[in-house]
View: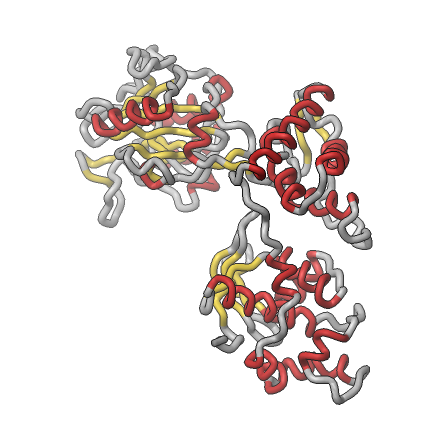
Amino acid sequence: MTNDPLSGRSDQSGHSAACELANMGFRVFPYYPLLDTTCSCPGECHSPGKHPRISRYLDLATTDLEQLGKWWHRWPDAGVGICPDNQLILDIDGPSGHASLEAMQREHGMKLPPTFTCVSGSKEPHHYHLYFRLSDGTRVLNKPLCQFKGLEAFQCIDVRSRRGQVAAPGTLHRDGNYYQWDCSGLYRSLGKPDRVTDLPEAPAWLLSALGGVLISESPRHLSVQGKPKEMPSRGYGDMNLPPESNDWYLNVIRKRWPIVRAGQRNCLQVKPVAYLIAKGIPSDRIREIMNAWLNGFEGVFSSSSEQIINELDDCILRTERDFEEGKIHSITDHSSKASTKKMHPALEGLLQSTEELEKLLAPEAEKHSNELSVSQLSEKVEWSTGNRGLPFVLAVMLHYQYRVAQFGETETILMTHLQLQEILEKRFLLKIHRKQLYQLADQFISRKDQHGKEKRASVFELLKQTKRGYTGKPSEYHVTGLPPLS
């Protein structure tokens, strides 16, 4: 075996290359090997030499040396792929990609820092990968650079990060050469890293251009400077808070923007500050609410208390200025608007004519005058905790008719559970915890569970989930049991 750590030549086995990368901290998995210049997979392949050998490779890629030994014992000629976690990899595809990279830097007036570079085995020049580190929790989409807004002119560069994959050093290219770490000075290469933490951090201007965002994850503990800290609760907390009070707003931003690890605070606090400013809250009160938000995570931050306070003040002043200059627009409270609408006649007709929904209506209707219409009932009844099925259905209907009227979403609508909770609270004075809301949703909304198995609505199907949202993004639902609205 070669002693040259950068070589990636054929005398370094795929297994040893995979183990070397795993020891650096990269999650790796096997590729189908090449047969001459074609892929050895059984089907027609458009990615010879870069075709994952295992299904679910994005989840199963690992740093576990024992698992790597099993894979390469079974497939000794396999190539090596990397699934980035907190890494950002720019895949430069030939001279056109190299020219695009240079042009992008000129346009932004900034240069990428020296970094670790992997050159591919292509015979064509300027095929290489630039490796950068991302701060914990930062997410960048996997797609060609030209598909990012404002970067359409920069062709032949792919962006790879979390939930993506790239060919790693030690993998054979179909041109007959191996991917390998570069030390020739191409693009100010730093050679080969010892650990993934050696990668230079992706510059802020690049992340801004790529629309990099912080995402929330839910680890059981936080780790700061090697010391574990229990993660603050992300539950709903006290549901009986006075509306519009400081504690009420604090509860909202803790739910929507939880800090889950160090390194997020300075960027993440912009969103709750903008939310509070859009609500018309004065800066001194915003400062009180945000200080309480930050104090809930005491010990998580590596910065000094004085620095945190100064940066919070700067954030508030900067965001207020952006509002005044029109760079940020007030946030429309769609849930409040939806909750005030009168029920559409077609929806009232569904409630009155559907046997399954009449069963839900009956227990509440018995408590009130038989002269009340569905519309009057939905507006006048203060719901008890005993029967929540009907108000849940009404909340879905109110949200549906609002999406149709406001956004023209007739067959597929966007919706979050938080929006339903807010409509239930604002229209029906009914406060429901997330777990209770899921139980109600299972009665009226079909979806796929975490194992991909179809879960049909148990009472009456109003909607069918077609795409599950994630933090800060709504889920998509196909309209099934609800009538078309003209």
